[in-house]
Amino acid sequence: MNDVLDFVSVRLDDDNSELIILDQSKLPNELIYHHYHTKEEIFKAITGLEVRGAPAIGIAAAYGLYLDAKKQEDLKSEEFMANFKRTKDYLASSRPTAVNLFWALNRMERCLFDHKEKSVVEIIDLLRIESENIRSEDEAVCYSIGEHALTLLKPKMGLLTHCNAGTLATAKYGTALAPMYLGHKRGYDFRVYADETRPLLQGARLTAWELHEAGIDVTLICDNMASIVMKKGLIDAVLVGCDRVAANGDTANKIGTSGVAILAKRYGIPFYVCAPMSTLDISRSCGDDIEIELRKGEEITTTWYQKPMAPSGVKTYNPAFDVTDADLITAIITEKGIVYPPYDLNIKRLFEGGQ
Ligand code: MRU
Image (cartoon, rainbow, N blue to C red; front, side, top):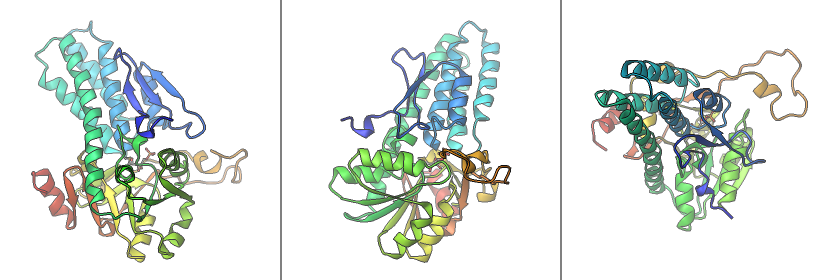
């Protein structure tokens, strides 16, 4: 059997000419890899959640920008730059909330600007290297988040997680799931509770699948069962990922996360956000400044059901993310270390090089 950590959710093929995406919208029933060549295909893969999870979206977009640049090697420098900018803006419009998308695209653009004196062919190769760096650095970042998070946990603990912040959502290991994988290898015997995560079931389809494949003790619960497992004393810590953390620590993550944080506070359970530095966005002062993606109502009424499970024409409201207020967060775990309140001060210090 394959180790689940060997499944790569997004990567370039051996010729560096196509993007291979493990289609997360089909899991756990089908393990399908798509081979994409064009920016339109990659845009559709992001909006359609074939590739999802903040870091994986950023990696896919960076590869998309490289693959599109590669097709333009006959263009003169000025036209090449103009096309790059158009493709960057196009990919950036795929999803609004996860800042890693913009972070990765900006990093690719910086690479272009830093080498603008070079030939188009040389620039294309540098873009390939930069996109590969974004992927490989994410793997190291996730490993480091896992190590830091593990210092907060003890063997046999009960852990609750929401959505999927696992290996599928990143280059490898995940963010919130990284300590579970590292702990598993070291005999920690965690008991993990995975919220199913309505409406798109990332917790059931992806988190429960990943952890189950890895042989980790995982129990799937509906979102509205988080309170009972907490009250029964089954949960010692909550670990979640994030899509964007504002300068004051307010954190956007999958819809339902803020409710879990409120419950955790009620029951005195630590609530940890696992965040790569690429997810911290100090240009947003607080959660109100974070754009929340609204998705189609059919995701609530119809998707996953054989028949519609709501009256035809009923109004729906389907925000894909919510913001957890900073005062509900016990700590933010980054690759550089663990950040405690006051977040405004300590996140700033982190960017200035302190821990
Ligand atoms: O809509 P999704 O599935 O892309 O949302 C993903 C999440 O909210 C994850 O929890 C977050 O991106 C962290 S992934 C390490």
